[in-house]
Length: 402
Image 1 (cartoon, rainbow, N blue to C red):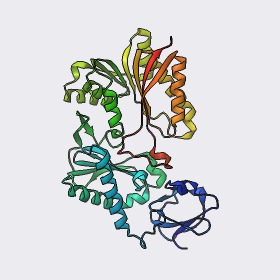
Image 2 (image 1 turned 60 degrees about the horizontal axis):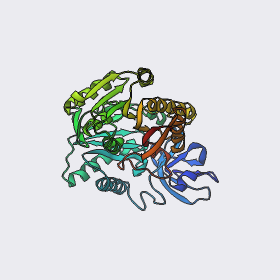
Image 3 (image 1 turned 60 degrees about the vertical axis):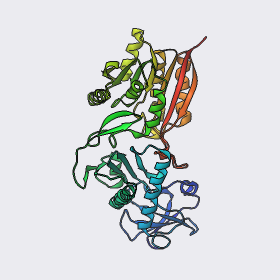
Image 4 (image 1 turned 180 degrees about the vertical axis):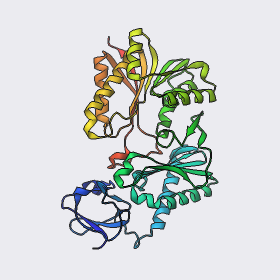
């Protein structure tokens, strides 16, 4: 069978459960007459047709599935498939999320593997991480603009942030730049009633972390009249939500000079500066210093970057999460609140739970769970696609042992 791959007997367990990736060591036969990035048929070891996907012999992820038991070119055209995927993604977001600024396409979870599209007011920011989807990128974006326009949403510009290192594994170059006409890349958005400047040119990832939108809102509700410490503040999003929620005072800490500058600018945009301080320090050094000084807070927020991006470093990451949570608990007032999270999908729910629980034990604290949350619904979790589930978020009340 031309332009096809056949799995080894007993392999393909991930895609048979609902996942979208086939690894190179799962394939018994490849009959490829097309180029990398093209669409191939995928068969089980016994010849049963499993669906279509993108092939890339440069990648450890050999095939990224687009369809299941549907043959592109016979059962459906590629254009029709794109139209359906885009339409479904938009209709889903309209049902579950505020759509002023949100994630419009979330890769595998929207059955468009390797593609992320964020909407910031009237601007789209796209990240393409796989060769096959990169070739369809412009067609998907054209369809997105068309679908949005049907709901009277006009997109004035698109910026590409395909500068992640993982593109090199696909045989792609890292790239960022305008798609179409140029525009001012400093964009003002409003989320949960809080205003931000988003830098889609030089900000992290696509410019702003939209996945914590409703977690930020949840934290704001416990901050009224409280003294709040926001660690790893980045551009100040949790700190600003705390201030919006009526916090008496908020201290925002980050190691990045640029992050602190942007957080202060966002505070000025919201007229919150009279109730906020900004500290450019390494949180791992700053928290022990606060502990030695006897400083106590009503609420501590921990939103660190991923401590692990591979399974090999999970053990060290667990130690890092335990350490940072231990330090945070020691500077909380009795009955204070800890908002803590992990954004690595390699750090499982169980591992993260155990790290926080171990920190509480060593700090001689008892913890009560207020809320357990994950990423926002515009970042849907596709069951059996591990990469789509990554954010674990707890709000905990921390009490002294009696």
